[in-house]
Length: 336
Ligand code: TYM
Image (cartoon, rainbow, N blue to C red; front, side, top):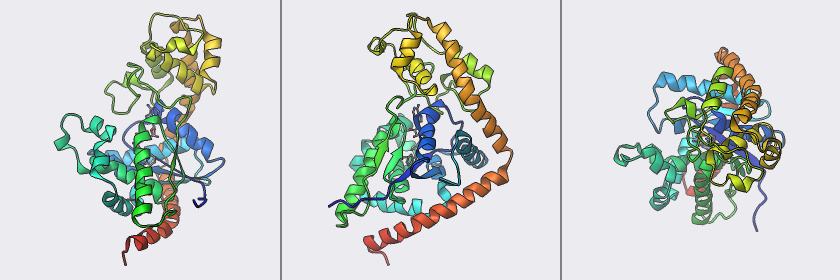
């Protein structure tokens, strides 16, 4: 008989540069919704960030910037726990235990490692290779049951489920860890690059024209949308007709998501229009949602002590929740 676990939400964002529209629509917008109905823990995952070298000063700045981003998007530190990963040592401790539960064969299947390590795998950090085990530790340290993420994290989530299952089996403790459920937005699971509709929008893409950053000005948003790749056909009536038009599909999906509508409704509203006209509507919709967030990030960034206080409080709460679980895990493993 499976135990009924208390519903707990956990998710993380790396402090490695600008937050962008992909982070917002794919994950953070959902974080805000979830905090209205569940116990939520949101983490600035700085231990994950250093799997690729970060200049210490930059990292420090980016941890605060991501915290500001969380608050600016609407996370409430009184409702949700907001903290940075490195301040709760249980993440690293449980990751080590999971390094010993997880299998090399499982790691070798991770597509994100292959993408990030590129052609020079020998030179990638060992941390980058075992990154998914740390991610499983983040989630399971809190016995989280639900994990809101973008579609690109799906494989890592499946691995976290395998690790939870294997730990429960190996240590004959069938109901110890819950098997966490990914919560992936159905309407917009993957926001694509503005320059190439087959690639995801990402912080690491060289061209800034490929993404909308949460800190972009009105002019930058207008320019980027104007330059965004499309095709010469008008907007169709049916979503099936967007099958081989990835850039068109991406822009229309972004518009639907940012206006809290559906692709079908957007097509009904826009069909027959050419893209230059639609792009004006898209820019306006983006500006009215993104620019106020950017402005809040800018204001919050000025108050470093406020951001530090929120992280400290959040870390204390996270430590409290996780300590009990970690002690139990150590006992199950056989440590004294
Ligand atoms: P990260 O920092 O790359 O991204 C943060 C969140 O944004 C989502 N995302 C996107 N969603 C849709 N379209 C896109 N183009 C796009 N780009 C990013 C990501 O899916 C993610 O939800 N490994 C994670 C961080 C992490 C984590 C965790 C997440 C560490 N531990 C535990 C959940 C639970 C990462 O690198 O996300």
